[in-house]
Each structure stands twice: as structure tokens, then as C-alpha cells.
Image (cartoon, rainbow, N blue to C red; front, side, top):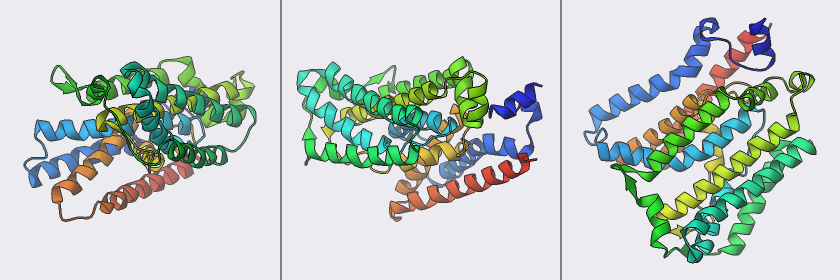
Length: 327
């Protein structure tokens, strides 16, 4: 009975019921990440240094925050293409608010992102508009607003605000503490609350979830609002890190966040995914970027090529898994 309910609601079966293929999809990225790390450590002595590992995780913080929101959206059966533009607008909002104090510089992008996400969720959940169309309009519209507000970069001269993204606590970057806490909270939210159960339910079988009394519109509004808020926060932290607001800083984050989530085992059709897998997907992209930087002679565009290959492999595995699940 519990297995039937799990399948109807899109929840992954219990660990003992998983096939080898499902285990490979869920934990395979962790193995790839480990192997890649070992090979890189043997090839580049500086790769495994504490400073370089810290640099990889710190750089991954921004993508990590966005991927948390994107994962929730995709697990619920949607997609959010507006996150990259929201990051760019977030850096601009932070820069414009920074003369009034670090608190407002941090708050303004989060509030803006929350409002954008809420509107996205309202149009998708209540008006039943297609997520792709709604968030694509958001991508274009937010990018235009950011460019109007800041045709050129805006220098941030608030040292208190800049110290948030560049400071450290107990020897670790503030950003590392933040991303660890964020993923722990997101994991607990997804796996230990009724909200998380409803997210899986809506993504796995929306009609069945509605029949069981789940407020589908409310769940969709919630996940898009969270996604928008986290994108705004990522923009604020990026502005703090770079001490500037630039409208184009969020370019490609929408694609990279989807790639990180899917590589980490989040099913594009919804209903399946873990925050641990999403985190591994984020770190894998960060490690790939760092290795290409270590090589030095390769063009940075190779990062996109390698990430794309991993994404194709993940989608193929998901397709095979879905076909095997079908009766």
C-alpha cells in the first residue's frame, strides 16, 4: 500500500525497494565527484589544498542557493527560467540600496526576488499559465529592468556590506557557512515536513494530489516564491562579494541551476529529487570549472561542454529509469 501511494505521489520508493539504476541516478554523481576529485588531486597538487577547496565551495555558493529553489520548482513539476535575471537585478538592487546601510542592501534584493517569485507562482498556480512562458517572460523582463536601472556597473562603497561576502567565521568563509545551512534547511524542509510531501505529490501526480486534498496552487506559489527569494539573496551576496552591481552577472544561472539539479538526480518531469543530490550537482560543476582553470590552456567554454555532457548522461539515465518504471 505504501509503495502504491509513493508512486502515485511521485515519492521515490524506500531504499530497499530501489533498483540499481535508481541508486546509480541518486548516488552516482557523488561517486563521479569523488573520482574527479581524486584524479584532479593527483594531476594538480594545488587542487586538494584547503585554500583551493574553500575557493571551490565559496564560488559554488551562488549557484547553490539558486539550485535549491530551482530543485523545489522542478520537483513540483515546474521550471524557473527567471532566476538568472533575478540574480542580475538583485546585484543592482543591492548596489542601489547600499548607501542606506548593509541591512537594506541585503534586504532589497530578497524582497524583490520574493515578489517576482510570488507573481510567477500566482500566474502558474492560480491562472494556470505555462511555467516555461511565465518564467521566460520574467527572464526577459527582469533583464530589461536591470539594464534600465544600471546601464553600467555600480560600485558599492559600503564596507560593512562587502564584508558579508568576503568575511570569514571560525576560519571558514561566511558563504560556506551559509550554503551548508541553506542545504540542511532545504533538505529538512523537503524530507521532514508536510510541505515537502506535498511538493513531491504535486510533481509526481498533480491530479492525484488534488484529489487527496492538496492545495496545488498554494504549493506552486510557495516553491516559486522560495526560488525567487533565494535568487535575490544570491544576487545580494554576489554584489557583496564583488562590491558592485552589474545587470548581466546572472547570465546562464538559469541553465546552470537546472543542469546542477538534473545532474544531481532531480527528475525533469517532477516528483523525484534530493537536496543532497542537487548539492553534489552544484559541486560537480564547481570542480569542473576549477579543473579547467588549473589546466590553464583550455578555453573557459570547455566548462559548458563538459557540464553539457554530464547533463545529457543524467537525462539519458532518467529516461531509462522512467521507461523501466512504466508498466
